[in-house]
Length: 385
Ligand code: 3PG
View 1: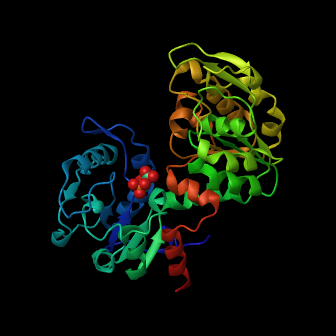
View 2 (view 1 turned 60 degrees about the vertical axis):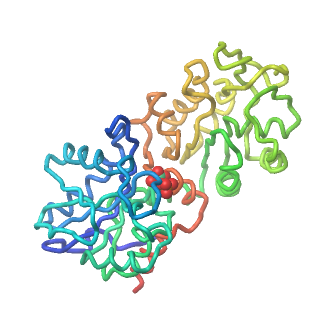
View 3 (view 1 turned 90 degrees about the horizontal axis):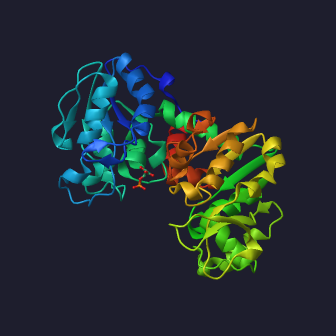
């Protein structure tokens, strides 16, 4: 996948519209996890250091698209955190029709683009308006590149010059290394619902060497295979699909689990055959992964998405912690991403030891599944034109 990059353009005195994904969690009016902001800094700094006139655009959350300012979805806390990270003051601009001119080497941030009608429907007039703000459009919001919105996709079509930022390039390089590996590869996939990950598991089990399942996904597979899983979290409506997956030769469903009558009890390690009617499976037992140590040893790439159990509770975090440690102890190139995976990796103390941690959730899963992401398609077309 090839795009124009930041190094293909001169930014001096150019008006630059930069799409970032600054969709960070906000708690008590403050950014509670600034990872997406920190990972956006290299692109921001490159444009400022090269004397561009920078306008940043992002969404935050899912506000109503009604043209009205909704304080609970304001980018204000994000701008405050960016000011700290960059050591400069930054104006947050409410009105797209009343943009101030930006000095060379300076920046402003536009208020949440999802307040504007037309953003999510990729409406032509909004896309054109955005494109007209700038001489160069830079797309660095990989985490929103699966959305065909005005600020991620339409704007590219109407911009004279458009390129990818450093984070987007880095994400694609790391994730491509996983999906293009023709050697020994391993995917470790957990999470609550098989329905949300069915396409991913399907696609990975065809593309990758081996796939190890955990979490509610594994419970549903176990039930589909005819084991009793008591009161465990399962999706009854997915049994046919789960059985089809679980029967594939390269898909591993762990059979030693941690079960308890409820989440407040200590769990006991049990082989799946010993699960009683009142039991719920809350975790995979570490030894169930250890049996497959050879797969971790042989893998040249490892993809990790989703916790293996109820990792938020210490008594049911051992399976997730064990698999996390096995992943980072392998010599294979390890990539983690999507939803709860980062919190799980952080809790297991391995976040800094993974080779690559994606900033994306939905976009990460769609890219790995091999789907075409609209914003990336638009950027690629720009290269051809
Ligand atoms: C994300 O957090 O996955 C991205 O910011 C995209 O957000 P969305 O799912 O609301 O489009």
